[in-house]
Length: 42
Image (cartoon, rainbow, N blue to C red):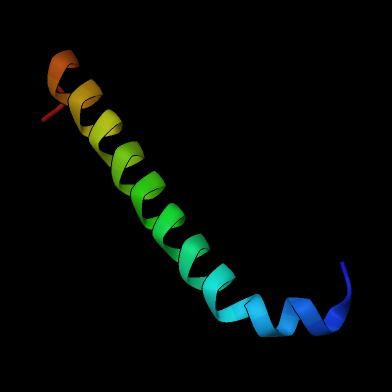
């Protein structure tokens, strides 16, 4: 990937990555929470 195209797309890329990371962390947290609840840890 050429550097110039990367720099001009980087805000979009960063936003997309942040959104993806947030949703991934949230879903991971929900899975862990559900797992703990179902096993009686909470």
